[in-house]
Length: 327
Ligand code: SF4
Image (cartoon, rainbow, N blue to C red; front, side):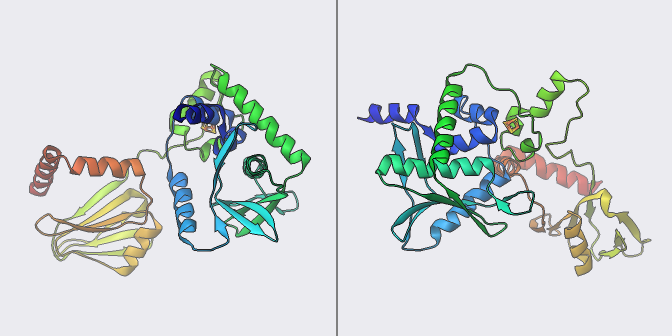
């Protein structure tokens, strides 16, 4: 019985994979065939939205996992609602909708295919008629109605067949011609699309998909009684009995205030505007807290926590900190 279920899961395609297929065939192949999965900030933000929606209690809503071997499709709907006797699948998107030439809101092509596939899957698995699916784009607070007609069913069916065919192929598809899709793609660090484009075309001007190394300074304020303020577009550092020092915001990555130094509210606002992290460390070298508005990468946080649970590494770090303070 279990092997039957597993076999059917192998032959059916998940609706979310169909969404990837419509977005970029290489993305579909990397995830579905090569089983490569990565997460970026957008993926986590999308999951957070779904978790928040799940917490909202509404008796009309239910989520549902369905599978249709006849259609070759399976999937779990974000939400299913029954309105005036009609069953309607809903899909929630964190971002913005697409706009046509008249600036009217539209669904993105991959989202449209996804909701059509869900609607068609309900028809096939439950034997009922579904007339439409709906997509809510939360950033625009827009609800798009996508009718399921014969043309919609044909679109979904053709995409399922094409995706199943690609799944059999031993060849990874080329990178998408629309390089703007790569900017938002969670698989970019694995796919390396700009490197692939450059290897085929030496004249290609690659776009930067990953943040550059931060070569701005980390400034440690060690002297008690130092006051950090703002003057124009600069950070002003006033140490007791010393000339005032000013540093341009563009040159600072982090400000670390040790002991009893102070920072003004204006300087804190300025640091937020300029992506400068502000950190507080006690006179004894104990980390107290941070004021940091930047979005950190999840991978970096994981590495930091892993490093801090390694006592050898912590000792080495402590030695370096003591050395720095002595110099
Ligand atoms: S990085 Fe670009 S080419 Fe590669 S899978 Fe993502 S969208 Fe496709």
